[in-house]
Length: 250
Image (cartoon, rainbow, N blue to C red):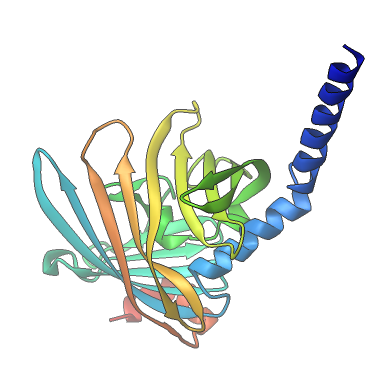
């Protein structure tokens, strides 16, 4: 009996040590993991990338939209719609977590929220602000072994109500900080959609995901696939990220 009690005590201590070593109680470690994963998805430097979004569903025809995203410091970005032709010229401007849309036939930009739907399963913030580190406080919820790889499961809580999602569960590969999967939740803690990061390729010196598949959690079969291409570093002047400058962009 004494031996069993000793074994149980050692097991509890081992679990405690394992949990601590994985950083569950270390917010700095959790935030560091999140930051490294952000740097895998997109470079720190100013960059340009083209994004094609295909939305499919069992009861709807395939819908395709194309965008060009210009990002500076993950705080300022421009999202320019390039297709379909009828919507070409529409531009989203993000400064911090403030977002506006410029439409050629409307004289003044209109304020939007990051959580509003852009197209299909994609919210404005999914394209305009792909910076988890600046929007969420991370904790390590647990670790998981999936398909022979070990992952951190991060619990991301929005820093305020202006972020795209209230909460995100985010799987990050332990060995190289690759993003693997995300679950996005509403303010009422309802699962809205899931996302998987796929098709990693060497771009700008790092292996980065070039495909993001976002699936509706409530309507089975409805999903949007984002394909990233032509990513390159680009010098972007601060004046580009102003409402007054939007009309000058082609």
